[in-house]
Image (cartoon, rainbow, N blue to C red; front, side, top):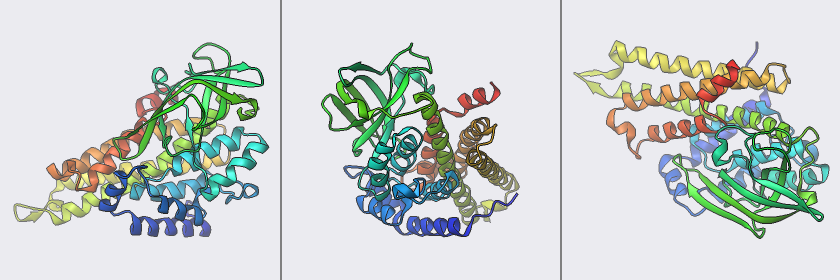
Length: 374
């Protein structure tokens, strides 16, 4: 099978690679992490002007009209630079939710704004008791008058503090773990009763705990979701896992290449570390695990694009490999760098922390192994 990028995808990849090289040296990234919003507004605007925010959005909604394969190209390069901007939260998760579940009016209102960067959205799907199960939802939206009243709490909502609106999964009927009865709602972050508790995450990004206390929602804010809110949410999660896997593959490439370069420079007993056979074997293992993840990423992405029957099972396999192999590559990169591998001044530790967080998002590798086997 031909895995070469199309000319357009290659241009996109080269463009993002140059952007990352120019704007994401580690010292500059560390300063951006400490800023009030945790990312650069200038970088965000540049991404919008270059058309990256609209890669997965249809042309009729002012987007590029690309598929998950085009998003993969972007995210892999973002992973090489540990990009901080909320592309994943807004242009992947929120845009996918609108694309799969939004009414035409909702798409016309929000998708062009996501594409041009004038609005940021995010997705609130995780709850403390639910762990990795998307259908474990206790946040409730009770119908009242001509709308709904929302009550509940959402955890680890990415970039919620800088978002203009949040797409929230809530239960309108049914028991806590039933798939039926889950719906998605567009909620203004400035609405009465919405409390956002922002915090930095271990990998340098931003997330928030959100409380909804008697939040009044107009009936028009409910996404159409013709197949049900859970089905839409599951499709969004698949797109999210593919994007995260692509980002992880980019981070893995940096880790194994940095490790090879370091062992060629660092000497022990008057010889470079790379001359020692046992370390050569270790680095070959790192490379093989990276290549296995990249191959599985291509397979899973193409299956989802082509709507293959086994696509979801392949995505479970991909997420398992990304989690397991990412930890293996990160641990070996840190170990082969010695004590300095754990320092803030060396980028190895930052990439490893990002891989650990990616493993936990939308289910860790143990969870997806069980889903694959089941």
